[in-house]
Length: 222
Image 1 (cartoon, rainbow, N blue to C red):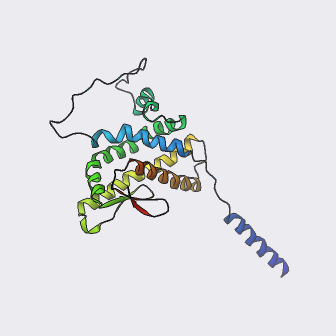
Image 2 (cartoon, one colour):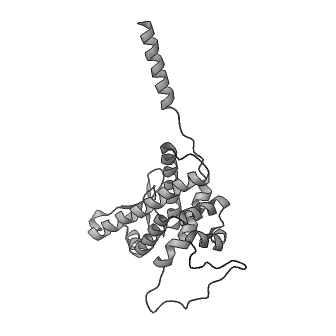
Image 3 (tube, rainbow, N blue to C red):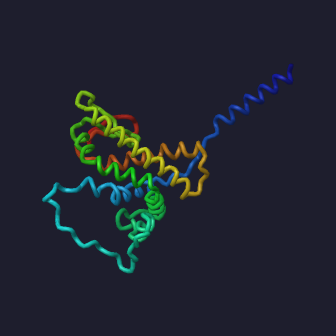
């Protein structure tokens, strides 16, 4: 009987010790933030900031960095990003450059940014009206349900799918670049931090009057 009690006590102790083990994942927050900014500069603003027809400024000749080879027809986006260099755009650390290049080479991320770029004018209008707000995880949520249409709801859902693609891809890229094992626990932890950093980047880029949720859950107006 005593032996059984000792075995049960040992099993309980083992389970308890396993339960309190935590995963400590290295998260290069500054580099991640700079990578998000670089991707926004290169992939997000091209469509959303276009002027109406007839008001387009004259096209300027693109600046070509000295001694930088021009990408040929078979060049990938990854090659273009490396050739142009993201440093002048965001002054990112080397890890930030590597992360931006890694994400820029992922077709699903490029597609997500292309879709977000097309939605940007309509989404900005919803933010400006107070109909939607930015959550602490970098997603868009409807705040005023009395002033939202079915089309607006569909737009918000599509936007969040794109943002989740970017955030999830960032989490996987972080583990790859920093050479950490991509276990489920590590990925979950990195995903949460990647989402929080994405939200911080979006808060900084938000326009005055937009509603945003802080990390403590409080909603504020910029």
